[in-house]
Image (cartoon, rainbow over all chains, first blue to last red; front, side):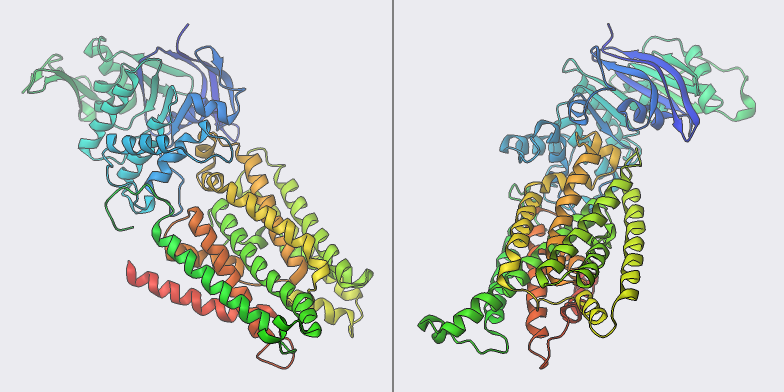
Length: 277
Length: 333
């Protein structure tokens, strides 16, 4: 049995279906990236799994169906980061992170000192050390995303559902965020499902990629083992004509780089295994 | 708040100091309120056990001052809760029709019942009916959106206004219509000891519940899906919080008539002073509400030989304060 399974998931808005009968599964310790063009249903898929959107089909984590769960039980299993947090009141960064502990607290219970320490540690981890007392609304969009990430990492759930968590981050913190997600996932009985804005990031940090190519078609890529030609072909269904290249970092680690080709040169010959640098 | 050090102690020292100052000011106003009025009271007379002075003190001044403090506090807290839950700085308890329901109830009480206590009860029933209807209507929306509650509130508000208008039409213009109008303008005049206890106890209970639920109220301010994924049963929790907040208002408004501006202004003032929404800010909002209403009531019964509606003074005191805060806020940023 897989760690997390999605079967025949359908969802949409006002009678128009955006995703239809989508099925896939996710193993323990796996980071699955969702790629798709604008409007292809990345957010819809995540919201349907969370149960925020009305949907058909079912999802199960370690055999537990998510649909019948109370918000409290669901939140203990799954953490969700929306594209943009709706927090719009003056509140300290620490208090935002402490919100993540809500599923573990009684209705009237206050967070324990240990939770506060965990929250501060999560802030340090995401690069927001020293910001705990700041007003959340005064942070930059990127810092807000990091703060919400800290909240989600601290909360102790097993499956993270993230909606373009890197979209407002600068170059350095994009990589930092994905590193954090990888480290978090490696700790066992955990998995991450994240839609990503940046395909290069997805190719290098995700174990699997789910490409949303139509309402009822999705393709699965394994960036670590699939041949470049196959991945190029599949990715070009989303991004138009592109080319993939293997490059090496200074320390020798191999990276995949995706370049946008001019549209008329779709079938022009190119060196598939070109190594730059 | 400008320090870079992570501070574990929230609410901040800043809001603690402000709350202490607010409480001191409120206590001072309470003493003034106890000693202000047509019948002169002196400390010596009260201590010496002057029977007439003691009776005026307990039956009139003490209950009136208590309603001023608790009522203002309740309006401030309720305003804080509404603005946070609806994520709208202009939200006030009127949003879901509590004030217009109370007015219609009071008008019905004035027309068909007799005695101040019955009018209070009728007004309380009217407020509850309006809020119950608004929340029941909003429950028809399965998605449970914030906007549905606001729309339902607007519908109930207009309905209650229509009922009020019909009642006014049937009222005798000399006596009943005048007392309906006077009731709507709001005053702490008609309050006397025997009729307020139940309302005050209910009000204080609800305030205590709201303070206990403060953390949950902040969670409701997140976007609905986000709050749900933080483990919040959004619909149920919002219903409970709004009900508690509205009961505090209903229990006060049914005693005092409509009191404008306090519920809107007091929480704003508190937030502009602390730049937070923590429990300290909520407390400060309540204290500011108590200060404004008690001060307004002192003015209402001392500037003229006749008693004036208290709303005149809540607005007169509140508007300059709000303008001061806006100007002060501009300078800072």
